[in-house]
Length: 367
Ligand SMILES: Cc1ncc(COP(=O)(O)O)c(C=O)c1O
Image 1 (tube, rainbow, N blue to C red):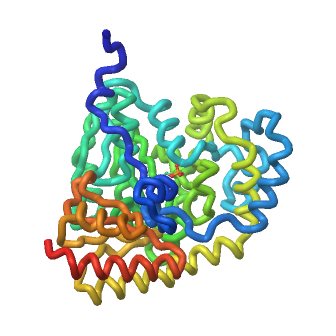
Image 2 (cartoon, rainbow, N blue to C red):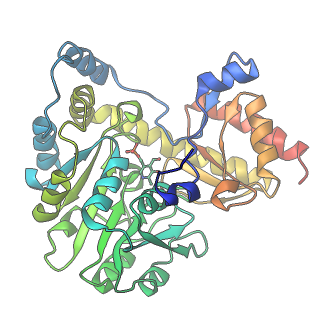
């Protein structure tokens, strides 16, 4: 049989998501499984969000509002931006794809950190771009190194802030300096999937940046994490009107489904639920740090809802040990982080189970 698909696809390993709970239960014959592997929100949707979804369910015979009118209006009010500054996506993943579709031709260059969120690399390769990778320095983005990697062919630089899988972040001063020095024909994609967790202190407030006439910037955020809507797939990009305009041109007409739009509006209004999620993560993260310190295990301080941990052991063995006892985490060896796992903050009871089982793993697995 003749292979007629694009050659680049033979070089791409498919994205491996965290293992689903039901699959692990089935495969290992476990009745109770805890998933701390995909940086999801452990609390789940609020009653208000569930009601909004139920109300919207009666209209799913109709196509969704392709322009996300009400959500656009709600966000523009909340963030003091114009409705035209937004583009909505089937998860913020789609904002990455739309940006590549609108800004990158085959043979163009894209700069990504290594390691970082894998979709930047995979999606750029599929677009036919040449991907230049810049290693992290001390588990942080090396912005200086990324500036040094820019060539005449560079079209897009991806910055995850905070980063996944490290949870580290670029400060407001660092990011300002980077944007001031990047050439004006390079688009800076700032991925703020974990924005709500990271806010405060020297973490940058970027929404105001998009109006710069001298720089091309897209900021992506999502309802999947702090707002707890990962299963509905909805995220958004913010950009100058002309940039948001081209991103809107290249998206599918009905890319965001109606249940997701209704849920996102309700989630934005439900400030109490957001606060509960942020408080849980803030308080429980402290307990994770305490556990790692007491076990003598190194971790990277995180501004997000997950922690990257250097087990200083074979992380495949640690992963196996945990999953056999019903705790799913992410082994990070495939990301080039040998010995590391990434674990996200769950409910207090779930975290207690992780603490117990991970403690046993560290004591029993010697290397
Ligand atoms: C850095 C980063 N960007 C984007 C995403 C994608 O999120 P969404 O569910 O909005 O597509 C994730 C999800 O894990 C992420 O970690």
